[in-house]
Length: 219
Image (cartoon, rainbow, N blue to C red; front, side, top):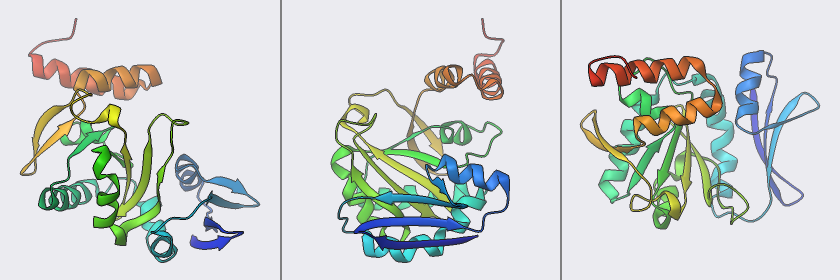
């Protein structure tokens, strides 16, 4: 695998070449890279303060980010939690990371994290050496307002922010994990998400967890 980042027609371009493994190709596609002439490309229009850093970071970090597949999720999440705690960043864990911190048997292939909307760019600045995609204000055209991506300790972290998902407007449950207090999406909400996606293995795993917590089978 060869990862590159460069400016092309005033657009930041990320490119991954020489990917032979089909599973790895699918992982890169899932990160919203488009296949063009045997390579995978993502382009960003506009000016970003972190552009110069991404030109250095992406070629250095991309291979680990795509091949790691969740092996270092706990290390990355501990690192993220430690820095955020030190700087007063309020954040919320979503996606399959919620199942992982609750002890369910899976490796999240990335970590999906919301930060409080007015701390989005502050969070970027704290992790500037790990930024691999621009931190963007997407306006009202997407499901969430802000999006950026890190590669932290080899793990892909998708950072999202939207006032609708701040703690005072969205349900979260406090969980104790690895010495930290985390705000996570409720288990039953995660179950509904997996039912909508029809991911039967995830549904069975979460239902088994809920059954253990309640002391009997779900009804």
